[in-house]
Amino acid sequence: MRTVFALVMALFMTWGTAGAKEVIKFGYLADPSHEAVLWALKNGKVESKLIEVRADALAIPALIQATVAKTYDVIQTAGMAIPRARSRGLDLRIVGTSLRYHKAGEGADIWVKPDSPLKSAADLKGKKVAVYSLGSSGITLVRIALANSHGLNIDLKGGDIEFVEMPPPGMPAALQSGQVDAATLIHAQAYSAQNTKAFRSIVSTATDNYDKFGVRMVSAVLAGYGEKLDAKPEIYQEFLRVLKASVDYAKQNPAEVYAAVAAATKVDEKFFERWFAEFSDFPVALIGEYIKAIEILWAEAMKLGLLKSVPPVKETIWAKVLTQ
Image (cartoon, rainbow, N blue to C red; front, side, top):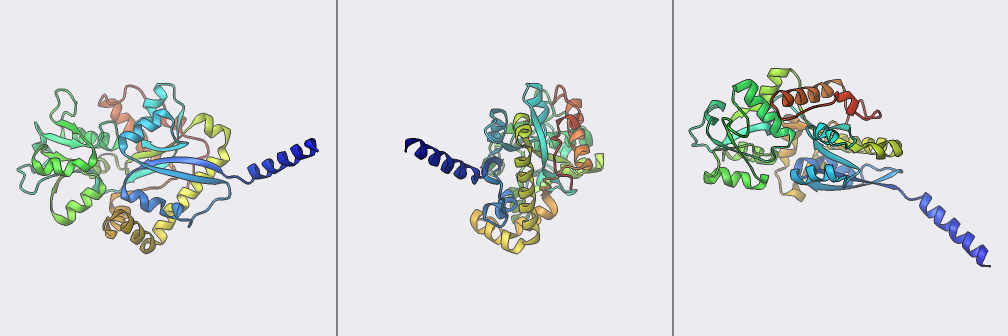
């Protein structure tokens, strides 16, 4: 009887396990725009028979730390993080594209107070500029534009500008109080500044980089870890499918998604429409033009001494990325 009972229990446990979904832990940037990207996935509009996605919003410093710590299965991280991680022996691979600037790239401007005497990039010499993370690709792209398009020395020691790193929520107050002379406001802050006229833009670095290189730059990628990707490739392919489906749902049902996310985040509903149209996109897929943008980012960062060495970009890309 004991043997029969043990067999029954074993079968029961096997049936239960067979029906369980694989859990994919996903760390992404804490920004209202990304809540719109993930809304369909979080609210049952996009479903999977294979996986359950548990997604956590993280501030940029936490994303950088989680990338190295391997806290998540898939992490949204700076394009700059890939060569840095691989140089330390971490098999971090690009599995998709998460932030690609529009030509206008309104989330990559440098802002000052309305009555500031600063009028252009040249006026930033000797001034303090607030930035959200010096290790991010977004700020690296700002520095690349200031160097290439405006001839500024962007070195942290002895350069033309004093970059002051601080958490994004504190930047508007620091700028308003005069603690800093200019700031790289994040997307929702930039949108608010445009509408309220609380601050004005003096440099559009995304436009500068587009004019210089002829491609829309990629600031953030989706990354995974080689051993996990190789062990269960079908699970990660499914993750990319449902994430892309969530992005597509937001674009196809903007009224539903933007209204819901605006209510949850207390952000103007029109911000989300503006973000997708003029700030950035969240492609998920990885195609030739996006790869070229990453190659440019790494090459320019090398030129400016922001990276010591880089592998060929194609060697860092997972073989099963979405290509459309």
